[in-house]
Length: 136
Image (tube, rainbow, N blue to C red; front, side, top):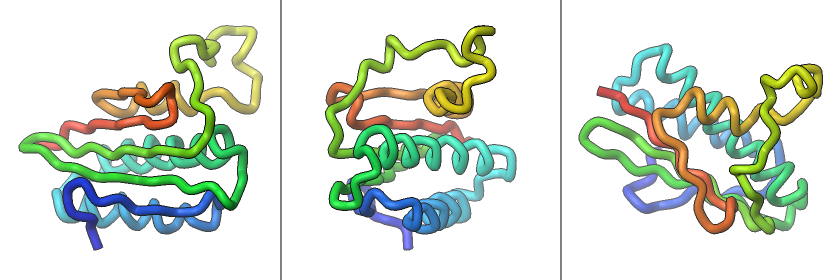
């Protein structure tokens, strides 16, 4: 079931809840007839945002919640992901394509989001990310 505009899906900080996030993305993309390539980009970007919220924002604390919102416009869809963490400075993240970082096992989530979404906005000191995708 797709949340109405402004409605949020609230989950706990557990990787077990990723199936709910994946289902939300699938349902939204089905309703808006999103093509397969765009669906893949949306799925990866949104799940990266939720994983970051679970492991970096909420530090894997299952007591903390993550709110996933969805809104649609005439030619785009937007997912927001907010955690209960302290936030972070998204502008000072190391470049994962820099040769000194290339072999590190993490640090690519924000990079992926920025390359897969048409617009990425960080709000509330980095506690929330809004991912906008052009679909028409």
